[in-house]
Length: 380
Ligand code: ATP
Ligand code: MG
Ligand code: MG
Image 1: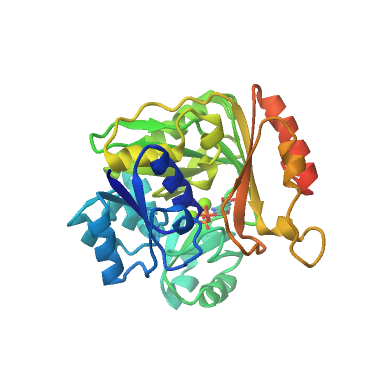
Image 2: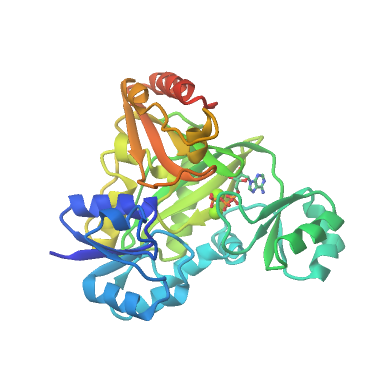
């Protein structure tokens, strides 16, 4: 049988491996951590760094096609792999998603509105009077940020200079702080023939820069906005000649204007509900695009609320880590528990997620409220 490979062994890699295996593929994971969530469930686990020659040679030898589960794999690595094997998404598309400056330039090229912004790459940039117009703002490192890490809110030019130093003096993007009504995201899968399918738009709630809750049903936002988000996501994917699964994050501003935030060149946390609420999940779409299989439009068959299970939940009952009350959660109808197999719970660490499905949005919400009460978290 054919073997599909993935760079990165986190939870996204694990769910990709599950989908690939259930469709009859062998899998190979490259991740240096011997206990990585994906490595533990894969047929092959290559335990080397992402730029290790021998590890990459072994991946090529084992695999018919290779994808990535995290966007910070060096673009040169994807380019080198693509000389020998089918690789999706391509290095050029991942390179855009890796760099907020390139990403914003791509949004501008596609004609999709994004936050007013400027590049901050020197001390002079921090004191440029023109940048005062972007304050209050958020300074974000151009590369390597996730879950709100590598970001600082700034209100004045002196604060901007201090924040830029504190972030290490690396190239950054300063964005105007926008008045958000809510956030949403769209997951598209695009084949090498240019065919696009998508999941229904997700409505997302972030806490402390980390996704906390995703809610999906046919009326989770005004229909015109939904249409606009879908069209913007598809035009961003087309503009990259993208092959694979792409997530586009949006802001909806007070007043209703849609603004693109950022993209992720892979399945996304906000798409995890698709495992339980859609007939085709985002991970099955990833397998299909990678293997060159047909894409069919996923159908949402249940209303869904997804709650992220962060490591904090293990510490709500005192100092020592304690397992949350899974049995009580699973006694609620429509709850689907996904744990990623991470041994050590830590605050802010994504340990798993819970998807609540129901026939109606109201029923899904009510069950999610009950689940959140059992976990001792504030859901909405
Ligand atoms: P991810 O884990 O999604 O990759 P990230 O570290 O790349 O996160 P962003 O998506 O840039 O971070 O920002 C995290 C959150 O901070 C956003 O989802 C939003 O809630 C808030 N935020 C970011 N930029 C802005 C902005 N310009 N105006 C208002 N809120 C913002
Ligand atoms: Mg990001
Ligand atoms: Mg984000």
